Amino acid sequence: MKNIFIYYQLNQERMHRLFKEGGWIFFGQILSVTGGLLLVRVLTEYLSPDQYGQLTLGLTLASLVNQVIMGGIVAGATRYYVFAVETKDLTGYLYAMRNLLIYATTIIAIIGLMSLVAMKLFGYTYLIGLVFGVLLYAILSGYSGVLGGIQNAARQRAVVALHSGLDAWLKIPVVIGALLWFGVSSSIVVAGYVFSLLIIIASQFIFFRQKIAHFSRPKRDHQEWISKIWDYSLPFSVWGAFTWMQMISDRWALKFFGSLSDVGQYAVLFQLGYTPIALITGLAVSFLGPILFQRSGSTGDKDGIASVRRITWQITYFSLLCTFLGFIISSGIHNWLFRHLVASEYRASSYLLPWIVLAGGIFAAGQMLALKLMSDMKPASMTTAKIVTALIGIFLNVAGAMLFGVKGIIIAAIIFSSIYFIWMAALVNRSNIRT
Image 1 (cartoon, one colour):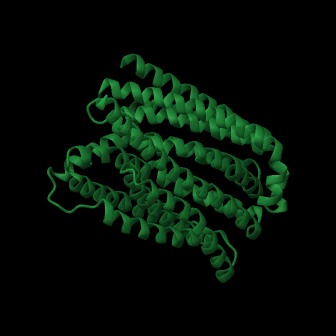
Image 2 (image 1 turned 180 degrees about the vertical axis):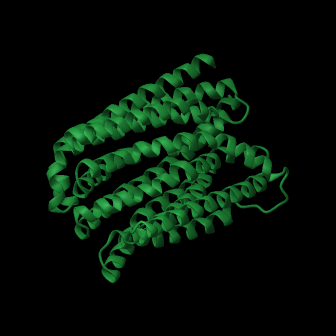
Image 3 (image 1 turned 90 degrees about the vertical axis):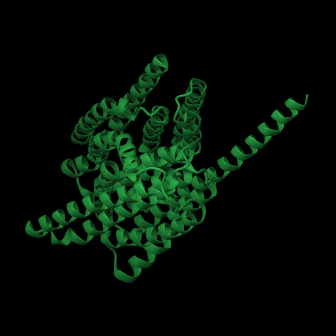
């Protein structure tokens, strides 16, 4: 009887802790979504569709840095925190992360310098300010991502939630102030993003120093940590180049076969439809990631792996349910949303909103399945799927933009997301059989 009582008490405490953590993540995601929607309203009021399109194309350079260079480091930082705690060598792990960020920053700086020189030589000097700002923003985003990833892995949910929400909301007054003070341009918007992110990183680092950082002597050479983290992160960088091309091909295809205005119209659809459903589904990923990593651990325990598999599929089904509910709801309120959230010149394409919600939700469910493979320490198993689906996505985007414009891009997104989800499901099932 005493054992039953103890088990019940421990289970109650565990459920209370999980509920509290989930509440903080939900709070952070709500702040992010609402802040992002309000930012769209602000930008569409100040920027014309052409200027919004230029901003969108400029930010594709930041996504290149995040996908190919910084994204893998963030993934490695998040996954290996558990190992650092298990081996009681947090100091060696943190030294390794610092050095990896220095290497990444150096590479980005060299690439950026070469790009700026090329623009000067070929007469694109009017874009130098935008490109410089975007590269700086990309570097800072990587730093913020690593700090947030470590804090999330440490299950400091309140810290992560508050910074996630603050990041979205702080951009609004900073960008408005920059536009009013310096004038309206895409470069000024990016400058506002940079200043806002600097404030976020400063706050993240204060919490990081207080709660996580230790400066005792490392138990092992931090080069060993660098090697382990890099081996895990490398597949992310390999397929990151292809996923980046797929991610930006929709916007550049619209620019090539249409106009900057088409890019701006699509960017608004993407931010109102694709991004929120991905963020909401990402709530589950943020909450479950550290839990799944801890359950999988570093020993490959079969019971832990089975538990991770079961939880992953439950959340995937829930994600798909939320996606279809989002599709139905947005079908009924898309006109109302566009009347209140964007300027009048962006409202003609509101009828496409439910379909991009559908595409975003299906892709997000596929990402949930990918998290299972990452928790199993099998990111390399996704390399072929990531590369091939990215190439398919590029082809679909080019064909869609050429034949049907913005509508064709939405069709391409639905097909791509469905293929990606099916392939991830097949990989997870095959992994289960082998296990």
